[in-house]
Structure formats: C-alpha cells, structure tokens
Length: 608
Image (cartoon, rainbow, N blue to C red):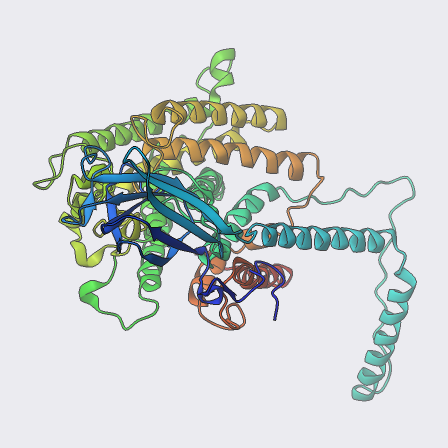
C-alpha cells in the first residue's frame, strides 16, 4: 500500500529491499575494480575534528551493499591498511587511496566506484542511482493543517462574537431551563424561587470592565516553551533539526530548557513583591522558597526513577527539576536578602539613575552573580583534572581531535567534578555524544553548569524587575530589546559567531557562558514580541499556549509519566517514516494542549 509521504515508490531496487530501511537510512553500493582489497573508513559531519572509523572491508573486484545513516553528510575514505580501527584526519596520506565527501537522503540508493586511472591514481566516484524521498513535505503538510485549524477557530469565534447564533443558543438555554424547572418543581412542589432583581445602571453611567493585572504574555511565553518541550521530548518526528546539538551548536531543543529557567526568573521578583505587600516576614518567604526547592528536587528524583525497577546504587541524581530547585533556591534567596523593599532609585532626581533604576536596585545581586560567573570560568579553565585529560578542555573527548583523549575526559572540569562528587553511577550514562564521539558518561544537568544557570535565572529576574519598575510598555520594550542586543553581542563575541572556533563555544551540555547569553538574548526578544502582541496591542490572547503555561509543572510531570501510555503514544505498523512519527508526536502534543485548555476553563491549577 503506497504511503502518503516518504514513499520510495518500489519495494525493491536492483535487488535491494527498500522496505527494510529505517528513518534517515539509505543504501550505498561500493563497487571495487581494484586488484587488491581496501577498507572503508567513515567520518560524519556531525563529528567535529574527529578521527575516521573503520566501517567495512571491500574485496577486490566485489560489490558491497551497505545501509548508511543519511542524517548528516559523510566523508568516505578508502585505505589499503586496516591495522587500526581509527584513522586520523591528517597525516594519513600514505595509507589513503582516495577520499570523497557525500550527502545522501532517506530511502535513496547510491553507488561508489573505485577505479584506477591511467596515471595510477585511485579514483572514487559517487553517484545517485535512485533519488531519496522528500522528508520535509510532512512538516509543511502538518504546519498547513494547524494553520487551517487556527483560521477555522478564529472564524468560529468571530461568528459567535457577532451573535449570529444568539437566537438559537437562547432557545436551547430556555428549553434546558424549562426542563430543569419542571424537575425541580416535582422535587419541591409549591412553586419557584423568586427572581433576583439586579438594578440597572443609569443610562449616562459607564460601567468599567474589570481587567486582570496578570500579564498573559508571561504565561504564553512559558506555554510556548512547554509545548516545544513536549514536542521535542516526544520525538519531534525524529527530525535531527529539532533535536539537541550533539556537542557544540544551537538547535531548537537546546533553547527550550534555558527559556524555561529564564521565565522562572522573570516571575521571581514579581512574586517576592507580592509576598512583601502581604506583610509576610522574610523568614516566612524563605521557608516557602526552601519548601518549593526541596519539593522540586524530590519530584526530579522521582522523575529519574520512571521506568524502574529502581536501583539506588545507580539512581541518577541530577536532572531538569533538580536544576530548577537549585537555581530557584539560590536566586530566590539572593533576591530575598538583597532586594530593597523600596524599589525607587536612590536619587530619583538623577535622570541617568532613573533611566537605569531597574539595574540600580539589583546592583548587590549583579555583583554576587558576576562573581559566580568568574568562579565558573576560573574552575572551567584552570582546575587540574584527571591524568590524561588537559586542563581547560571543553570538548567531548573520544574521537574528538583525532582520538587524542580518552572518553572520560568529556566536558573537562564539568565532567570531572560530577564524577568526583556524584560518581559515575549517579550521573547520566547515555549522553548525546556516545553514539557520535564514543565518549564516556556525562550529565548535562551537572554541578558546574548549575552555577551559570543561576546567572541565567537572574537575568530573567532582571527582566521581571523591569516590569515592576517601569509601567509604560515603551519603556519595557526598549529595555528588553536593549538586553537582547547586548547579551546576543557578548555571546556572539565569546563564540566568535561560529560553532567551534570561538573562545567559549555555544554548548548546552556544558551550559557555557556563550550559551547562556545567546539563549537569554532570544528569550528577551521573544518575551518582547509576546508582550507587544498580547498585552499591548491585544491582537492575540495567547491561546493555545496560554493554557499549558498556566499549568507548567503539571504539563511537565504529566507528559513525562505518560511517555509510553495510550492515548498520548502509540505505534501502528513499522513507523519507519518521519511523517508517521510526526503525526504520533503532534497527536500527543495536541492532547496535552487540550488537557491544559480543559484544566484552565475548570480553573484547576497545580502550584508548588
């Protein structure tokens, strides 16, 4: 039966079974016309500065059919020596017969021919025998599907708002009330309750509508991060562009967690001021901060035990909620102790100080968190680590730098501190780098990264303080845009606007300083856009993202616990295309959004 998308058209091609291929796989047929055997070594574009890895032998005058990963480009190197499993990128000319860089696609068939030229040189010729399928058409189709749904919903709301069906609705309500009244009359003979008389307002009096002071843009921002998080955690259709970067770099999945941390910081000074206005003592407020932090940490440990059985000797200690707990405790306590009760500038008559009033009131916290940043940088670049690992190393080890360092050197000081304090048994043992670099265990939510995470949450608190100090939308937007530009420029300078060539690369696993600044820059900009569209212009009410944003912790814990439960997740058939995986992912995400919408209208909210 032909598939709607990603259909190769035939089951077999030149004797190769295309139906056995998985997502992002292709057939490659290597034909050697050489009189001697050769060996094929492969290097993925995803493996930066890596050594080549032995893949297969190629016999003299033979054909080899190989299933290849078509996710990234590959460099194929044919050698006349297989004495080592790995071959360095440089200094291997004596044993290299030929080398070619190739790009393949899902369900494609490709040929590589090895021939000797008249000059005696070995030639590698790569060609396409069968074109791959289009893996991005399902993305466009699903996007258009949701666009149509959005326009239909907008149209229905507009029709209802204009009152076209008011007569029908009133008739239905009247019949329902009649039915209800007759039942109540049978239960209570003797009549109906007297109608309630509501005095009308005078004709010349305008009754103001009560408007909530809660900013919908904050909840919408949080909801966007939650929906994206569920989408990514549920597989994202297995598109690599939506996954985490293997090591250095920034992809969609990498911005979600820091945005979630940042928006928590935005809300912290607002919550603190509300508590102070209720005349709560600072000791009571601290007790609340400590209680929430402990609860978050405990929920994180519980979340790490999903899928049991639970072996306490190997239970992972760090995690997403644990990092929330640590940063909330540090930033919340610092704000409690160092934020003045009076948020006015020390000298309001000074225009300069008044202009930077939101920064002035936080200057003690700026000093504290900049010291934390300095301490993090000092530890990262100067802490002596294990034997065989260089000081100041920021790489993934393993195959990195031509297999120069063993796998346990991954992350340099960050990995070393986690192994020293928590031990290998209690950190994440399957990082994204294992399959690509052959690295050792490493925890992306480790101890050292949490230091810079507190700085990112504090930058969020700076955005929240801007909300408290300045009431004008223009003042807020200008300052958020300025912070977006400033943090973005500093982050780009640190990484030299490149993936691997800067002083401090953008790296989510390390939670590097450039990563903090670049993702914070994007967060300031996104919040500004949401604020302008939702709270200023009122062109958008934040739906549907507003609803998950109002129940963030419930959405996170719920989607984690229901990861393998129906109806959120299911399989039907081989599920070997992006389209099938994408439909299953979007189905689960949509169910969670509908659940959040129902909870919102039922006024059910989970707060810690």
